Amino acid sequence: MKQAKEVSDFINSTVGLEVETHRINRNGELSHQSYPKGLLNERKHHFIKNDFLETQSELITPPTKTTLKGLKYLGVYHQALRSELAGKEYLWPYSMPPKLKADHSDIVIAQTDKKSYEYRQQVAKIRKIERTAETGVHVNIGLTKKGIKDLTAKDPDVNIDELYLQAAVGFMRYRWLLTYLFGATPVAFENYFAPDTNAPTTPVRSLRNSHFGFGNGFISSYQSIQQYVDDILKAVDDHKLIAQREYYGTVRLKRSDDVRDLLSKGIAYLELRIYDLDPFEPLGVSEDAVDLVRLMFAYFVSERPFDLKTADADIEKAGRKNDTVALENPLSVSQYHDEAAEFIGRLEKFSSQVVIPFNAQHLCFKLTEMIDDPTMTPSGRLVNWLGADSKPVFEQLLKFAKGYQDDLIHNPAIGFEALSAADQQEVMATLKKGIPVRIKSWFK
Image 1 (tube, rainbow, N blue to C red):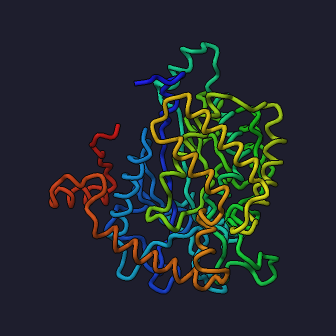
Image 2: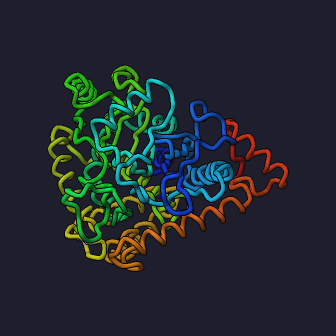
């Protein structure tokens, strides 16, 4: 085989997924049912749990080295959750909440541990509670141990934390591109916006990723770990944030629940909080969306293209650009078309020089086509198909919810298809108890 110019395990990043979605009833309203009783208690289950709200389920996959294996975990977790939903209860496949009551009394804070509940009450009191009802996909990405070894062998003076900062800055600077490519919230539904809100009157690319989405407006510094930590701690002291956990930056530097551990132990991985749920994907996220994150991460770590001294100013500028893209007409070519195409061209060239564990060139070709033709993006597909009126969009999303439910609960256990029916049932029972089950296959 022809050898690429550079081969390193840092390309083989670990990736984990956190996917949030609401339980709804057959009319497309937030469910009144309690947390599924067939699952381990929501306070103890580590990978199927309630998030901020009582109806807001969250599925959390273990880190894997292949996107496909990560999606298999996500799929079987979906099956375990869905199989325990009440009759005529479904998962809402869209990041903006479904129909809401005018007084928002249907938005109920999750009854988890006392400390978390009190924190969530504070957030709901200070922030608009309807915005806590938005959901999305978080992608966690990090270097493998071998990847770190490869990087330090190549350059003994390399600072791994600075590589993570390069990637964090890169994702924040190109958030607008991810919003363009995978934004999927062109409209909102009943009683989301207050009557006096100057909300868009026509579809956009991503309400959730615009200033109409959930957030608190605070962005920490990414010039160094010290500044990142200091800014968050000061924001808590100054009551700009209720707690460290309320830092809702597009990218979070992760090690533990206490950001101060970053100073002594370093960055373990990045958490990207960018993607809307993709309503055309039964699991809420596509393989392409995850692979693009992996390709961008490898590029940023390898090329180190940013000056961290100007990172904060660059991120602020990129934030304004993201808001512009998020509020563009989803059927129009973005005003940043040329810049988007140029960056994907750089990724394409980069991927031709290294060994990538997925079809990166093919991915870049598809992304370039999406940049040229916005009707191929999720928001563009929805609006091009169903029009600008939110009612047919809502009705189609409800059909998706019911159809995906039927498919997934009747399919064999994803990742365990080779097992007997009895063994598959045992796998599902184990997962419902909160006990992880490893997918053993040819996927490494």
